[in-house]
Length: 190
Image (cartoon, rainbow, N blue to C red):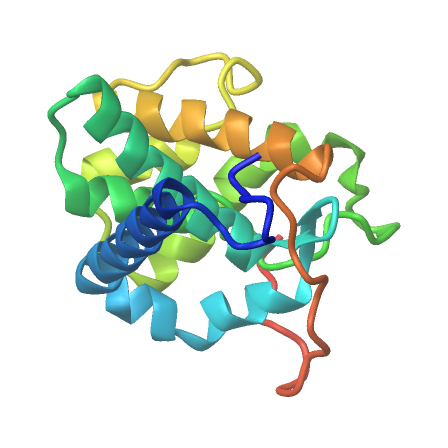
């Protein structure tokens, strides 16, 4: 489908790919403009060494959630604070450990319930967070967090997170696995 008999792509297919490439570049630009400090931080970079779902790293998962959050807002015409939406999405899983590793001090079996609080503590130590960003991080695992998000940005990130998690778990959204840690262990908060 989309290929002509001679093996070349159709003009319509090429235009679709060009549009998707432009869209990805625009989303990446928006994320960098809103959260360049987060993207450049050493702790955020360490998320490249932790797997989240399937073979997708925590860093890529957070980028996926930020992009899908923007897409949901745009597609459904939901007005929101885009900067806080992006920053909350990038920091929603800022727990800084591999939840797949067995830990006898704090077992990760209940990771789904506890990691939003750990992510919020880590993010609060490193960044000045708005109430909206705190709410996004704290409540993105609703209904496990019991209290639902207060702001529309929180609902958008919660929805994008569920979608991305599902797509990553079933390998629809793919990653390249975790990169070896070059700088030693990340700073863990438990």
